Image (tube, rainbow, N blue to C red; front, side, top):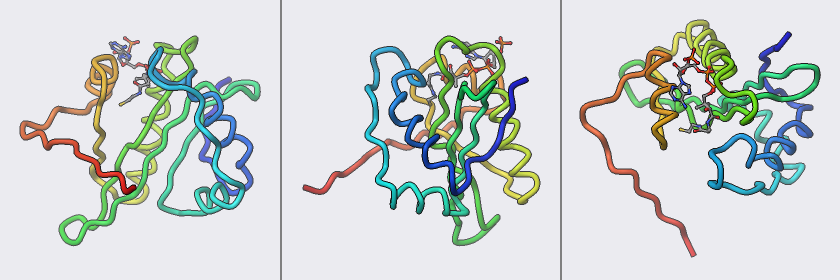
Length: 150
Ligand SMILES: CC(C)(COP(=O)(O)OP(=O)(O)OC[C@H]1O[C@@H](n2cnc3c(N)ncnc32)[C@H](O)[C@@H]1OP(=O)(O)O)[C@@H](O)C(=O)NCCC(=O)NCCS
């Protein structure tokens, strides 16, 4: 039986495996293996209560993960979630893993009175997935910008 659980301190090896196997969880040709965090950074990541990572695994094999983070707001509802990443192993897609991971996130949101989650869907398949799971497209779309310091 597949089981979804949240990563906790002590799960550094799983976090490192997710990074090493990143290609498996992304779209074909889009990413290579990711360098795992240092032991210290991994401990800090997993100890952060606002960092939420769930994995769905079966017989010790991780089938998919979801990583989101709590964003504190300066007014209104006080907090929201940013769904930063979700990935399901290629061979296990369209089997309900993504839906199960989102259901766990939703359960956490209800328990912690967080009412809104947002995501930047970056490919058509993902957009269809989010739509099928109840997300809607906002009418006013911001421009995604970054700046990297040299
Ligand atoms: C997007 C992703 C996480 C979906 O995970 P999944 O386990 O395959 O999704 P599920 O099986 O739970 O799908 C739930 C529903 O979403 C919809 N859906 C999922 N993937 C879809 C796709 N590629 N095209 C159209 N609809 C899709 C379907 O309605 C599906 O229900 P159905 O299979 O009964 O028709 C997975 O395809 C993935 O890892 N993609 C690569 C990484 C990625 O794009 N991440 C998101 C970046 S923003």
